[in-house]
Length: 66
Image (cartoon, rainbow, N blue to C red; front, side, top):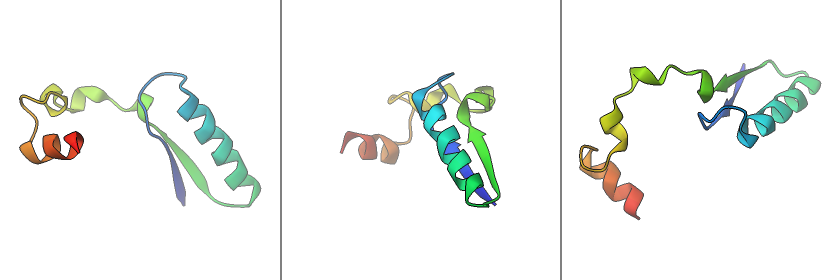
């Protein structure tokens, strides 16, 4: 099974439209596919601190600054 990921959590994003198009192309080729739409993921499972530089892991901050 192939999983196509819409890599943003913004509702009705262009990324989601592209993901749906790609999903259909794969299905037309006979592939078993599913969609993971990050807009449907419960973001309350994640810590807000993960996204704030002051509380983020130092290694991640460094990667983002490159």
